[in-house]
Image: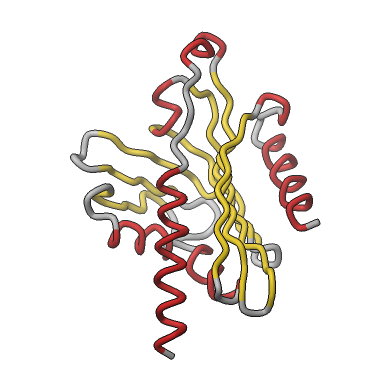
Length: 177
């Protein structure tokens, strides 16, 4: 049921951003974490997950810059990757504290640089029990017609790594408490 609600919210937000849902392809990663959803959401809600991931993946992420905003809706975030010649910039479009959903739209870089017309990242923190949840990372994307033969795809590995870092960080701090 929660996945259906998340999908519906994603489709509605995609339509509001000028993307028809039938045109979107998806890459999804899910990871179960043995920590309350509210604790995971605290990290994902603002800039915490980006900063933690950058700190833990110094061989992948050179820097994280907040170009505009404070971590809320409208914030523009730029990730620069090692060796520093490629980057990805996104705008936070939706942050829903009740449903624990964050949606960001890619502005430049990522799959937009290789033939995609849109890239939308949705992060859902789905409560499983009072002490566990699922981090669901989804990248919705559309390919420009002239690039369809090349079949460009976004890379979900960074989001998967961020989820693994979150799991390790929060589960270890839970055990230390």
